[in-house]
Image (cartoon, rainbow, N blue to C red):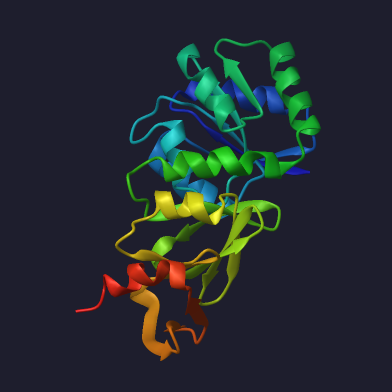
Length: 242
């Protein structure tokens, strides 16, 4: 069983999808929205498995909607505009239905949905979509079990290298980013997130105190974590001392 939300600013577009869904008992319609703002609200509230998503809508585009979701469901775009198809597949949408489409074309999309059960495929480019919305993002999409969730960067106490990935440590939970620590360093605000070790970045706003340790320093974070400053990154700390 998959929970479904329909988002389309045209009543006819929503009605067509509802009619086609009647052939699929495993797809349960939870609700619908006719604009981007309401779409964000209803998707974040009901946490559907699948969203049929229009692109051009009042309030915000379908792509804008994705950047405001707490968890990223599987997406089938349904739109009259073909110029967004490449971008849709860059965020690993299940399919791109170009209006007007037939019941047979709708079936193709549903069949692709059944084949595309690995939600982890969505993660890297969906995360990139959110990271690219502004020079220094306030929120990013990260993996949490088999879903993607948005994390406010102000809540990230420190970042730790995790093989080819990175761990984002908050007060209550640890998340895994699909970016390596060096890539995250480039994308985050360097005035707040300071690299102190090849394996560590700290949030300057979450620092409790700095302690001298022989020729280096230990940084104690507000959550009690202690992070060693390596010699190679001492200058990043010294620049902050007045």
